[in-house]
Length: 292
Image (cartoon, rainbow, N blue to C red; front, side, top):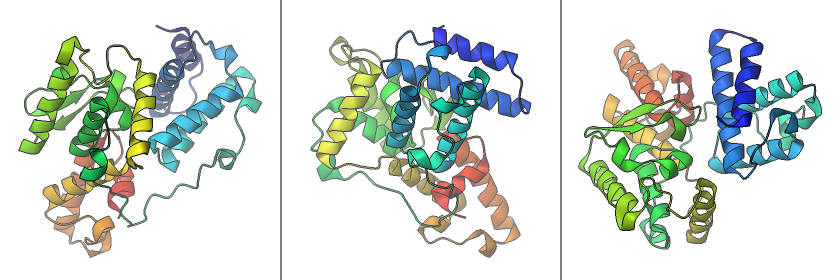
């Protein structure tokens, strides 16, 4: 275990603030923080060495990933908790606005879904970046997940299993492989990951995660592919239509007020399913993707 991971774990064990769920969420977020700082080049960092530059790096990284304002606020709360325990409150700005974090807005009923543009995808010259984009579109993966994934390990026939070490918050999850198109993407990813004696992940053998992430950013920027988080929105909306039989409110479907009691039951079950597949724990967060 790396030093910073251990430091965070010990701090959480010694300070049992909040409910059990709050404690577990905080520990998962801080594990993610330690891993991302290490991957960002901050090696051998200890908890007492945390500085403003580390917080600014994390916020920039999360914003580039397309994290929602609600997610960012939760993570900032965890960082402020650490700063308070260290007696170094000044390393984290008091107001989220200082980092350009907008107020939380769960329900807009405006779609943020995006589809991959074939012409733009053709401009991506790195096959690993192309494959990651296709996986994001087919399974609603986050960018980090689509880079770190080991397709051969993840493929369980009718299910794609994501290791905890690949996911936000460090929680393993499963996503069903339902269509021929998804199966084709998984098979292509497996072939690429093992080609030419390569590693089993979608990170070339001679690169680190952070190197491939930077390549991904450069390749998508050159191709004019932005806001890749919109691919998750598209996945969620497609799944909602499949599970309910009607479109989500964000794309013109009926709002919650227009649903009959029976339809509301179907709606809730669909949202719970989609929330799990996207790696969220709360049904409420689906309003960001589907509207309400």
